[in-house]
Structures are given as structure tokens and as C-alpha cells.
Amino acid sequence: MPVSGASVANIIEEMAPLELAEPWDNSGWQLGDPGAPVRRILLCLDVNEAVCREALERDVQLIVAHHPLFFKELKQIRTDRPGGALVAGLIRAGISVYAAHTNLDRCRGGVNDVLARRLRLRDVQVLSPGKEQYLKLVVFVPLDHVESVRSAIGAAGAGWIGNYSDCTFGVEGTGTFRPLEGTNPYIGQQGRLEQVREVRLETIVPQRLVERVVRAMLEAHPYEEVAYDLYPLANQVSPSSGLGRIGTLEESLPLKDFVAYVKGVLDLSAVRWGGEQERPVKRVALCGGSGGDLWSRARSLKADVFVTGDVGYHTARDMLAAGLAFVDAGHFGTERVILPVLQEYILQACRNRGLEVECLLSSTEEDSYIYS
Image (cartoon, rainbow, N blue to C red):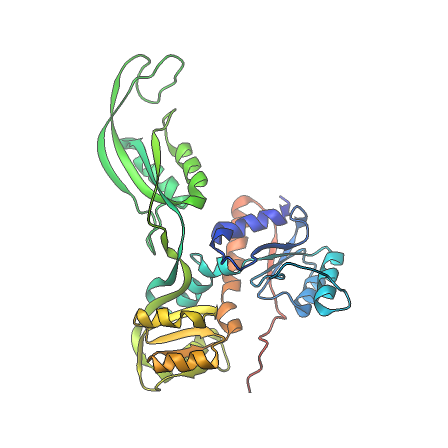
């Protein structure tokens, strides 16, 4: 089945909803026609001249980048300047651009979760949880359908609390109803008051997933008319999404050995780091990209070291003064880990939908810095 750019964008947004992006960000569709057919996708961190040439050479119709092509409102596109020439070249070639930026940083399974997995951290939690509106879903289910309904709403995204999925609560009771004329009841007869053993099944649902969860619930529920309630909740902190992660190593390492470990895991020739070489490292905070602003949060959660990129001079001084070691593994080095994971996610989602598309990783993209 042919794939449109909009279909690819929807697949990405199921993993990394645009609602999770920072207010200053510009994630989402950047350039081109979302309705145009896509046979081949190219994944990269940045849309630059080398990536655009590669897209042309590999007959790509859609570039999916981590960093937006446009951060601010455009006032002009001048083709005599590099940025304008790049945009004009993409338009002429019919190549569209989509960006998943801070929403991909913050989501479950995104940049920071992948980075934590690469470092083999245990008991991982969100370093700086985001805010999201939640609702309590309550539905009354006959005993023989409880597991199917529970499974359906969990698969649709309900019941996530931190790193725990499928969180529900159920209590058994008696439901009553009288099917009237024109009904086709799953249980009971028209005109007769029925008493049925049911489970009051409860869970939480993010506001953005309510429609999908309710649809899945109704499809799995056997009743002709389903009794359910949605209650707004006061708690808005999302323990499963947000910036950065914090967790523990299986075994404590001296800082100098941990630095070597990070270099090996991320395949880096060099990193910048600070702290006492022999100090033990067990609790690790991280933030892919430029996460220096989160260092005080890492320190307050008792991290021994903070792994991120783009650490400034004064930020480094502040961390060391506060007793927090750091490893600056670079913006590029801490974010590129997401690309093969995103590639597999897109390919698997397309296979599940019967969509035929190729998804390629950029082979020309390199770090802007040369270490020698």
C-alpha cells in the first residue's frame, strides 16, 4: 500500500506526540506536501547540505530529522544564501522534511530512554518530569470480558505510571439494568431486570489518548451500551515522560573508568569531563543533547555524575563546585543513538499496517567537531 508523508508523521507522533514538545520548539511538519507519496525515508539529526545531497542520490522523498529545519518564523528565503538555497533545492527536488525534536527527547522510548539503555542503567526514572493532563477512566465489565478489556485499554496507552504499564484496579460488584424495547442485550431479556456480576475497572489515561483508549475499550466490551466514566485528575506530573533520565549502574566505577565506559558505549574518540578521577560513580543522570541546565536537578536527586552535551565553562565550574562530576559526550554523540531505534520503530509500524516503505539512516552525517 502506498505511504503518504502524513502517514509517516502519524506513526512518529504515536511514539512522540507533539504535545510533549517544549513551547519554544518547532517539531512537526517542516517542508513539502504531507499528502505526497513516500517510498524512501532518510533519518538524520540535522538537515544540512550533505544530507540533502545524500537524499537526492538515494532517491528519498522524506527526510525525518531530529532538529527542526526552521526554529523561528521565516521572514525571507534568499536563494543566494546557504539556508535559502538549501530550502529551494529541497522544494525543487520534491523532498519533504519532518522533525521530531523535544517531543522525541521527552517521550517513552525516546532519546533519553535509549541513552539510559545504552549505558545499562537500572531503576531508570525521568530526571525532570513534564506536565500532562490525566483522566481517570472507570468502566463496568462482566467477569468473562475483564481481561480482554484490560488488555485493549492497556495496548491503547492507558495505565502508564512511570516505568510501569497496564496499571489498573478492579473490584467486583453487582450491576443492574433492564433492557427495553428495541435493545439487543449481550446478557438478559427485554423488559426483565437483570443482575450481573461485574468488575469496576479503573485506570488513568493521558488527555491526548482519551479518544483512542475509549474507542479500544468500546470495541473490546461486549455490551451494547457501555457504562463508563471519565474524571479529570488534579495530578498533572507525568512520571513517564520528560527531560533527562536518572538511574544506577550495576556496579560502582571510578570516574575515570566510567568516562572510558561512556566513550566505548557511544563509540566516541574523545569526551570532555570533570571531577575527581577516583571518585566512585554509581548513580548516573543524563540528558541527550544540550542538557546542562538540568545539572542542579541531577544533584538534588543524588547523582554522582551527569552525562550530557554542550556543557559551558561556567556550568562546568558550578557543577564541580557543587560536587557533581560530569561527562560532556557531545550533542551529536548523545543524540545519534536514537536514529537506529527510530528506524526500527518506523519499519515495524509500517509492516504492521501493511505499508511499504524503506527507511534509511544517513551515512554522510558527522559531528561538527573534530577531536585531535
